Each structure stands twice: as C-alpha cells, then as structure tokens.
Image 1: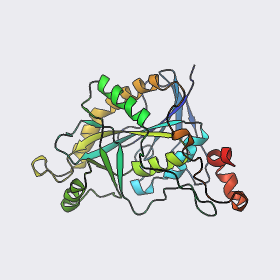
Image 2: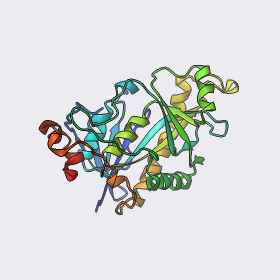
Image 3: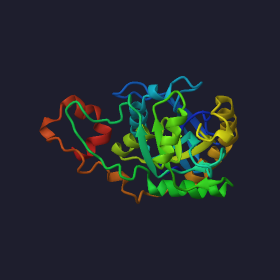
Image 4: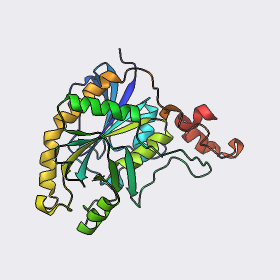
Length: 286
C-alpha cells in the first residue's frame, strides 16, 4: 500500500514515468492559475507518485513562462511531501561530462522575470534557503543513480539563468569563476516555492553539454542536447523508481517545518482572501 506521495517534475525529454500502475490524470485549480499540465498520478515501487511535465506535454512553455507557483501549489494540494526535479543542465566543469548525473547542493540565481514566492499582498514570510535542497532526498538520489550505474557527482552549484537563449561565452566563463558547476533554467523557483510549501526538494540534473566555455567540445547545439537527454531518460526513470522504494517512511529532515516562525505578519492583519487562498500552505500555523 502506498504510504507517501512523491512528486516528480520532468524537464526536457521526460514527459512520462514508465512503470506507473493505476494511472489517473488529475487537473488541479490553484489561486495562481493553471499548472503546466494535468498531473499524472499512479503507484510506483509501493509509493504514490505524482508526475508533472514542467514545460507541458509537447514542450509548450519557455522556462520563464512556466507557472512555478501553480505547479508547486498544486503538488501541495495533492498531498505531495517530496519533490524530485529532473532537469537538463549544461556542465561548467571538465570533470562533469555530458551524460553524467549531478545532485546539486547549492544555487546561484540569475533569473529576473519570475515570481518565486507564494507570499505578498498582505502577508509576509521569510523562510531559510541557506541549504536549498533536502539533504535526505539528495542522498537517496546519489545512492539510487549510482546503483543504476550512472557517473554521479554528489555535490554541485546550480546556476539558474533566465534563458531561453544559452549563455554567451563571456557569461559562461564568469559563472565558472563564481564556482558554479552546472547551468540550467528552471530549478531555482521550484526549490524556493517547495521550501515555502514545506515540501522536500532535490534535483536529478542530467548534464547534456559543456555550455560554450569549452571550445574543444564545440558550442551548445540543441540537437546534441536532445540526443543526450534521450539516452538519459531511461536512467532517470530507473533512478526515480529506486528512490521511491526508499522514501516510504516519515520525514526526518527539517523541510516539514520550514515555515514555522517564518510568517511575521500579525495574524489579524492577514487579508481573509489571502488566508483562504494559502490555506494548504499556512493553515496549520493560523
């Protein structure tokens, strides 16, 4: 019997999860508009899994157009406690070769156009994002991907850029000088919102190219990126299936109480509409 809900947000190339049983599709309404697509729910390795294609089926949404707030809010409404984000990234390090897997531990934010909080309009909260990834789920991903035979890098700094264009060569070298290890366009907002929603969050990053800093590897070409992604989709699916088997117990990390003491607005001054809209997230504290 399923005992816990695991959310999977699939990126480029990953539009479904193999091995799901008792599959059903669920549309979820949120105060923040429509999620990227309908959610695909089912049983995988004894756990109830909720899958969402980040860019919509058929890859319809730019990274900036993805409704991150609706996606994470809907996961919360569906009872998801842990989210695994599967994402394509460019490598900023020679040792992280295309086809390798990275489980990031830190972020650098270079986005400029995206809402990344559920709060505002009469309610203020400040959660800690010092360690933006759930260490427990990240460790499970490291172990599972390694067991599936992947070349795994268990730490890494993920730089999140706005996109949709890839980096200039000057930017790529700048990011390397900052200590970034991989570069992508999506995960930062998901991590921030998951923390506010008290959902564990970890990333399975699939390196597809060397960005444009590595002249010997050639510049980023979308055809090559998609080919590497195609090869890694099965690995991602097997890794998630293996992880699901290890996440059936209760949570021991601090993610489940990350909003405790973070809401600083006086309770009687929180607008009724905002209180009602955010009830799945803030209800237990009000």
